[in-house]
Structures are given as C-alpha cells and as structure tokens.
Image 1 (cartoon, each protein chain N blue to C red):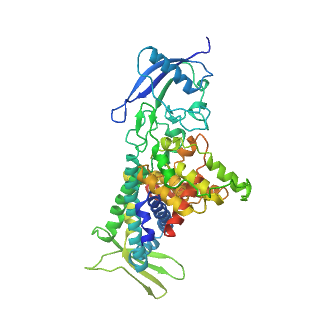
Image 2 (spheres, each protein chain N blue to C red):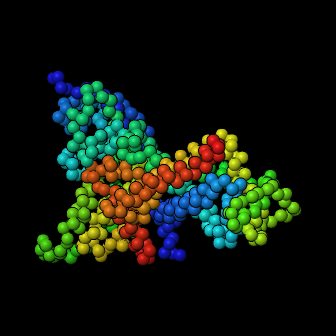
Image 3 (cartoon, chains in turn red, orange):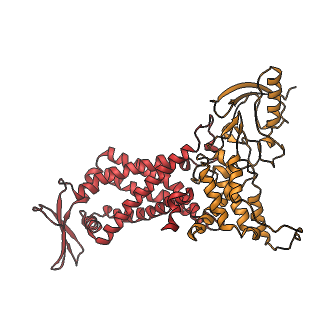
Length: 256
Length: 251
C-alpha cells in the first residue's frame, strides 16, 4: 500500500483518483442508460420492474453498487478538496480575468457543474431509490408473460405483510410479482418541474463530461497526436449522446 | 504626431508584499512602434519628473529569451498576442484611447515584491530539486559522441524552449506550475544525458512544486494557450506518466 500512498498525498496522485473514478462513473452511466431505456417499452413496466428487482437483489450487482457509491463519494470529496486547494493557490484574484480567451467554459467550471450533479444524484436517489427500497407508498403489480405470443398482461397486486418480490415459471409462460417502480417514474415525470430539474441536471452533466472525459486521459498520461483526436471525438460524442439519452426519458413521459 | 496612441493605463501598485495593493490610473502617449515595456519606460520617466514613485516591473533582455518580463495585460499574461513575451508586444496591438489594465502574476507561490514585480524563486527551488543532469568534469565531450535521433532531439528542444517566465502559472485558474515542471521533466527525460536521475528527478520536482503551494492541474489548457514559447500541453501528460511510473516503481 505504501507504493500507492502518493494517490492521496501528491497533487498528481489526487488528479489520478479524479481521472480513474471519473472514468468508472462514465462506465456506470452507460450501464444505467441501457437499463433505463427499458422504460420506453410499452409492456406495463414488466421488463423495467424485472430489471429493477435484479439490480437491487443480485449479490454481485449489490457489491458493485457499494463500490459505485464509494466512487461517487471519493470523486466528489476529492474534487471539492482539490477545488479548495486550487483556490488557495491564488489568494488575490485578477482585476481582469482573461479565462475565456484561453480555455473552455466547462473546463473552468468543473467544480460547480460537479456540485450540481452531486445534488441531482441526491434528489434522484430520493425520488426512486429510497422510494423503491424503503417507501411504503409504492404499488405492486403482477405480470404474466406468455412464452408463445411473448404478450405480457398485468394487474394491480395487493402485497401482504412482508411481501417479497418473486418471479416463477408457470405453465406456458412466466410470472412476476414486483414493486412497480415503472409507474413511480411515470408519475414523477408527469410533473413539469421535476422534468425541468432532470433536464437541467443532464445539461450540467453534458458540460461536465465535455471536459472531464478527455481530461481524464490527459491525467493518465495519454496524449499522442494519433490517439488524442480519437479520444476527443469519443469524449464529445459521449458528452452529448449519454445525457441526451437520459434527458429523453422524462421528456418522453411528460409529452406522452 | 498623428499616429500617437493615447493609452489609459490602470496599473497595480503595491508597496511591498505586506501592504495591500490597488489599481492606479495613468495616461501615456505611446508611439505604435514602442514595445509595451518601452511604453512603461515613458510612464516611469513621467512619474519621476512629477516626483512620484516609478512603477517597479521586471525586465532584462528585452528580446524574448530571458523570461523576466511578467505583466498580465487585460487579463492575459504577456498581453493579447500569441507566442510573445511582454517585451515583444508592441503598442500597435492597441488602439488610440484604449484602457489597458496591467497586473502582476497572481499566485500564492509568487508573492509580490513591489508593484508588478513578483518573486519567482519557487521555480528556482523546483529546478534545484531535480532539474539538472550529472556529468563528468574534465575535457569537453565531442559534440556528437552521444547519438540522439533527430525527432527525439526536436521534441526535447521544443520542451527546452521554456524560459521559466511563469506565464503558465499566471494564466492557470489554479495557479498550477504543471506546464513549467512538465517542460523541464520532458526535456531531461527524453535525452540520454537525463536518464541517471530520470525517476528521482520527477518525484523531487513534483514534491517541491506541491510544497511551494502551486495548485493542481485541471487540464484547462490555459497555460499552453498563453505560453510565449508555445510549449504544448502534451508535456503535462508526459509529466503525469513519468511521475506515476516512478511512484509505482517505489521512488
């Protein structure tokens, strides 16, 4: 561990932590977006609720999710620490600031953009994660899928005391009794002010990624005339497409 | 003279590091062919004639190679032109009646000595920590006795053009010295002469850089954009790489 102590004691080490956790969080964004695209399926939430159950009960996923929470916290705490240190490095500020002529807006505002995203994560987890795990207002549904026709039918379900989510094979098909996170999402995104918070947060995420993605590679020491243009292109595409994909969900629900 | 420029100057005046500074306004008539420093010479002559304290500013070679001149002009180190130092900036870059704000490099690691003059001793201490190579004394070695590929020599030379002026620090929103240290580490780590201290050098220089109170790099690219010698941002990636690999090897 002594070999790795520089990650916490030197300026370059702290930047490496920002880069590595940042890239891990980029991977998470991809997984999260792909999972959420199931909200677009018109199956009464069968696929999405099945997925939500899997993501909150599978031991491997649960382990990874604790790692994910740790990464988010580490990225945020180190980011705030670095931003404070960096402020201390210039105690008297300039009378005229020429930042806009030599750097991009997003590169100069990573801390504020990151703070917006961090607050958003809090709101977002309160909306759905907390409600799904601990809320008592969440409704239940039972689904049956016919193997031959692939058709899904569903009905409201009244849970008993200590009700567990379960799925089982039945004759000619499959059935699922689960908490209905799908309808929670649907009801939330029918409220325009929630949609506005989500869309603005995704805009902040987009700008954060616009600088962060390629910046992570620079910190990892990858800067080469052949590879850097590719990294920058992927970074730009990622920063636009991923937040756009997320923002499409509340907008789709609102205008549905 | 029809082509005389009337310049409204707002100059940072600070008696010493302990006093608080403030902007003072002056009017100067400048010839378009004057350098920015010569315009300051005119201002100082006026101030001396009026019995007032002239503005302290650093300058030496006045041909863009010593790295002494250090003025932030309208928010940009060495002024609005790309790839020049303040002494190479001419008054023809400004218009008649322009208001020009002149400030010192602002960084906690570069304390103000007086007015526009700052103490860049932090850079010297970083160099002393590791920015050198060990050579045997005695007869001078034949010029080409150590073979270095042309492209490597070119890359090393590109980094070696750093004049240590500190514009990178002054432009960086974090007052980070990574471009300066990156240029020195890149130059020395690429050449055969620099191999003996390759790992110990980068660790020592980064430790000193951190100890001096420079900020951390957030890859905004402002340093490379404002560098009068146009040192590329890739030297910072090289520094990150050299430092990380030295650390992982237990240095």
